[in-house]
Length: 133
Image (cartoon, rainbow, N blue to C red; front, side, top):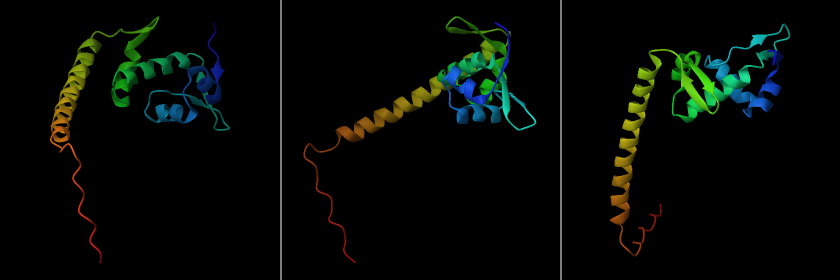
């Protein structure tokens, strides 16, 4: 299929991503549309696949800053994203370690919150009445 130019509305419809979010991706350096003299953005039809890769990497927990650096080294293979640069796997492992650490911290927070909840009396304690001025 030949590459053609499309406007933001068509990219939005084709990718399922709102125009506002597409503009945000542009601000973050993830998409680089050309500008017409009228100011309208012109994307390439191949940007639909780029947006799919961005969405997949966001779903994997990567920040837009990280995605900007790894996006050129990611290709699609059916439903999977495949790294194509030699150093990318090491970078993705570091990102996974960061996510694992965040999960551990959230698990600890949940455990603490659970202990507070279970410490509550079985019958609610009435709150002190508000003080009148």
